[in-house]
Amino acid sequence: MTDDVLVVHGGTPLQGQIRVRGAKNLVSKAMVAALLGETPSVLFDVPRIRDVEVVRGLLELHGVKVSDGADDGEIVMDPTNVESASTDEINVHAGSSRIPILFCGPLLHRLGHAFIPDLGGCHIGPRPIDFHIQALREFGAVVDKTPEGMHLSAPHGLKGAKLELPYPSVGATEQVLLTAVRAEGVTELRNAAIEPEIIDLICVLQKMGAIITVHTDRVIEIQGVPRLHGYQHKPIPDRIEAASWAAAALATKGEIEVLGARQQDMMTFLNVFRSIGGEFQITDDRVARAGVTGAEGGIKFWHPGHELQAVALETDVHPGFMTDWQQPLVVALTQARGLSIMHETVYEQRLGYTDALNQMGATIQVYRDCLGGTPCRFGRRNFKHSAVIAGPSKLHAADLVIPDLRAGFAHLIAALAAEGTSRVYGVDLINRGYEDFEGKLAALGAHVERL
Image (cartoon, rainbow, N blue to C red):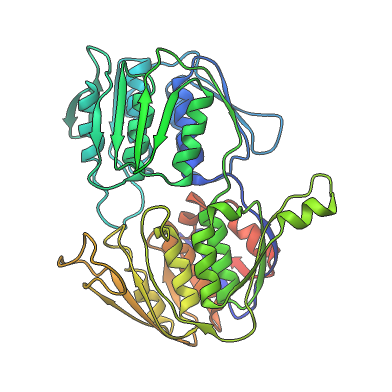
């Protein structure tokens, strides 16, 4: 489709100011949580992205009245009349997102049954839902797998359980939280994910009346309650989008102020950004001192004007370096002097996007070995999950096909940094997680146009 192609005239530093809204990885989950309440919920600062549209559609299919609030980015969700949706209607969303799996617990509590279609999402390696299903069974759910999806029921209700994750998966932790809060008894989850978005989801559930304790050593305890009410919540800002724009500033030798970005969510990224040689300034203190009514702080990122330095990194669960930060940053590392190492330990097939960067003049070699750190769960297996980036490299224009959300933004950054005119195909996929990215590019002085 020609209207899904962006022509990018590269070589111009990005300069200016943009704003990030609520985190994609929290907003969609908070919308699902609204199903658990008996009164309406209000969510603020919601980005206009495809994932939000998918969850909104699924909520409406199940009888939740979703409406826009008085302010921009505000949505109101009234779950008073939750009802069953037809399999055919739900299947319309099959393959468009992985969010439907998180509807299981809330629908079992509200209706006693649920149907989940085939799941989609980005193709960055297998993300099995086996633990989701096993956890639901531990709570007392009966799961019937069919060719079109999964039918679930809870003939005896859901009961608390003792669970331990083999890996601190964000999705599985969310599944347990959304199911346990109204399950009878106490649930203990060990080896849980503790990402900022998880803690923010716990804040949402606590506002609804849940009793959740986060212990040390990745242990979360949930005391089930018989009913929950609605919430009002402003989500944490999107730290992935903020880091993506930071990497764009570095790769294009520009300066971007990301309003809404929050230091405490990005400390690991900021340390790496500084190690490479990038500069940043936290602007919230400046705004507070200035006393500007309605002004908003953030983080300003810029290229220092001198050579960037190579680094050795490995992705990890929080508080480690986030896997969704690595693709945009690798583009910036192609401009750093020396050999940088990126060891991906979260998703085993997330380095395929480097082929396109090599096509543009980068020098990146991928390996099956665990490089630059301790051995990970992908070691001695047939996955190319480590990359060595030699720089600096002069990037040139190319025709690019976007493979997934984060790699897609990395390809876009590469096209912006390269000399010449590139065509980027499949750019609508970026709308899954980046609100109005074309408008933001225009605000930063980028020369882009739809074909």
